[in-house]
Length: 133
Image 1: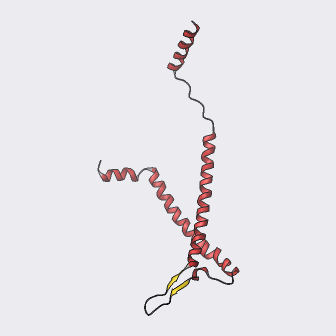
Image 2: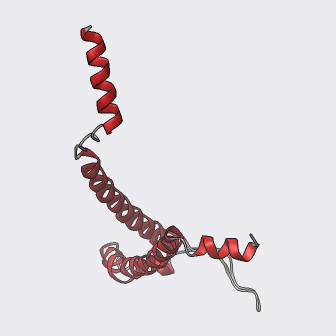
Image 3: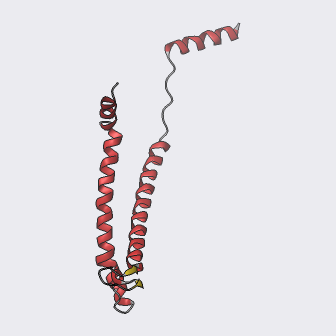
C-alpha cells in the first residue's frame, strides 16, 4: 500500500475527523474564554484594585534606547493567561466528568448473558445423562 493510500485511509477514519472537530472547537472556545477574561473578568478586578489595567502591568528591565524597544516583563498579561487557563481547565474537567458519568451509566446496565448454543445445550444434556448412570 502506498504512503498516499495509507494516509487517505488514516485521514478518513472517524476518530481523526472527530479529533479535528474537537481541536477546532477547542481553539474557538479558547478564544472565547480569552476574550471573556480580558474584557469581562479582569476590568472589574482592576477597578477593585484601584483602577489597574492588567494588560498594561509590567516591570521594565531596560528602558527603550533609540530604536530598540524597552525590555519589559509583562506579568499582567501572564496573570490574564493564568486565569484563561484556569477557566479552560475547569471547563474541560467538567466535560470529562459528564462524559465519564454517562459512560458509567452505560456500563452499569446489566447485560443479559448470551444464551448457550444448541451444541452446548446438547453437550450439557449428555453430561447430565452420563452423571445419572
